[in-house]
Length: 300
View 1: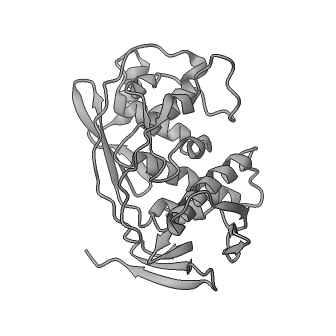
View 2 (view 1 turned 180 degrees about the vertical axis):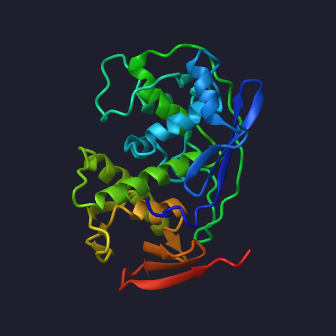
């Protein structure tokens, strides 16, 4: 995968790991348990009957789901749509979990990931548009419980635990999944395995929220056409209804970086070679011809 993460700042959260509080840090596209010198050795000990390590459990869950389109469906769609997991979210991680399966309707009485995750009804602070900066914050969580989890629910419990991570890690997981699928959809011989409807819906929801925030009104009628990467993006309006022609890569390149609205303009595409200097393709409120906006962070 290309260096899609350029320009995304590091993010960090804390988890209770045994008797200690440890740090999980995402940087340059990868999640690491920075208080563990040898996660592989700890996996081996757990396989031999040793105690499970919360940090390594989270790393393994991340690896299983960094390509799972359900992450995009379940995760927050923007500042007006924050979610929080139940207090015992991390206890839902199990020692052995199956690989992700295509989303399906839950049987009667089955608790779905969306039911386990709840909308908080509160707006959360976002990084200033166009800066590319976000503070590294920590979020403490409850210790890992030893309760066994039925095999049939562990894949869903994985997602609940990952989306309960604080410190911006949920947003970085969304960016990781979005970037991976954008690259996959750009390959002619890569079939989406039935994921395209979920990908389209997840992008439409986030695009709608970004447009409503930019326009300052709710209930925007939007039709989204996913186009191939390299084609010219567009945003038009007819009789109060909007039509967007954007590649799926918009989610990782623009939305995930907080660049959807810059200087009162709406961003259709963002390009960078080094993560510090950006060229944005934008349109104004009159939806006239796209015009470039250039942003450059000062040298550190």
